[in-house]
Image (cartoon, rainbow, N blue to C red; front, top):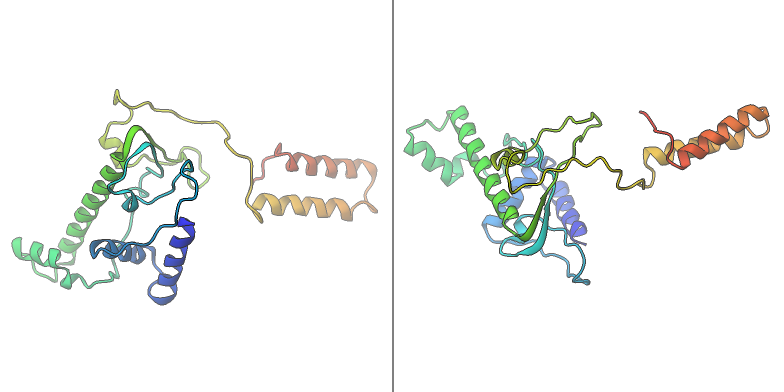
Amino acid sequence: MNLKNFYDVALKYYNLHDKSLSSFIEYLEILEKIGIDIPASKIKNVNAVRLMTIHAVKGLEFDKVIVSNLADKRFPIERTHNEPLIPKILNPDIKIYLEKNKIDEDDSEAIKEYEKKTLMLEERRLCYVAFTRAKKDLILTFARSYNGDEDSTQASVFLEEIDYKENKDVSLIKDDEEKCTMFAPCSMFDQHKDLLKKQLIESLDTDDFKTLMSRLLTYYSVRKGKLKIIR
């Protein structure tokens, strides 16, 4: 339900305002700064796993906390501010920075550098909030690949900052176990399986026994997940 609430907010912003991710994230940050909260759904089962944003867990504590997506360019997120919701010249923080450092307001490179540092500080603050919500166990995760290329992911700078490979308080686990073999409806797997099934049925009256058996075994192997589908 929380995801549904968030989806509705994102869809409304997409339809009425802007279609870029960076603009939507900035919109959420502005809502937070002016004290407007997006209502969360009510919890029906206290023993359920609670899926929450970092902003939503401020002030709360849990025995076990899982923080996901701690990968380079994902947390901290890589974003640009080419079209900010509030014009940069109206941002009081930028104005103070320019005046204090005697920088011309047309110096776009200096403004970009300031924004980059400010965003990193904000992301680091959020990371600290997430880490400190755990009373007993803190689990930090990132996928080894987000694009299909094995071991292509770099760890987040925040993991490097806590020296996650050598830190005596951190247990580093590289997980190779297949956790789930379920596929989403209309996934590439389902489409391929349906195609094989259709070809098998259509060939019943035309192909010889050997070809039919080959088609049947291929379909059965894919259905059982014993054949890997390669794009």
